[in-house]
Length: 128
Image (cartoon, rainbow, N blue to C red; front, side):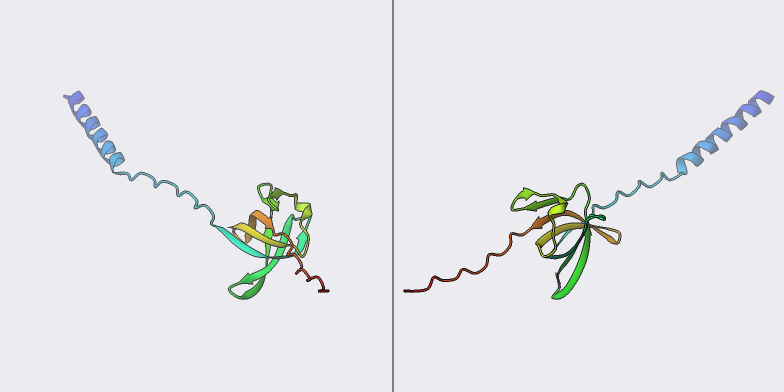
C-alpha cells in the first residue's frame, strides 16, 4: 500500500511539472536587423582626408546648400568614366555622386562616381 501511495504521488508530481512546462511561452525569435537604405547625394568635393579615408562633399538638399562627410571602406567602389580608380585620385573640386548608407551618425559611401569635367563651351571660328 505504501508503494502505491508513493507511486500515485510521483505520477501526480510528473503531471504537474509537464503541465507547467507545456504552458511556458517559447522565446520570441530575434529580430533581424533591417538592411540600411542606400541614399544618394551629389555635389563637389571640398576636402579629401587621406588619413581617415573620408571626403566632404558640398551639394544641395531640398534647395539648401549642405556639406556632408562620407567615410569610405574596403567595399567602397570608386569609378571615373566607368573605370575603377583608387581613393588617392579623389581631389577637391571634382563633381561626384555618392551612394551611401547611414551607420548611426556616420555615412559610409558604398559607391562614388566621379563625373567627367564639363567641357568648356566651344568658341566659334571667326568668319572671314
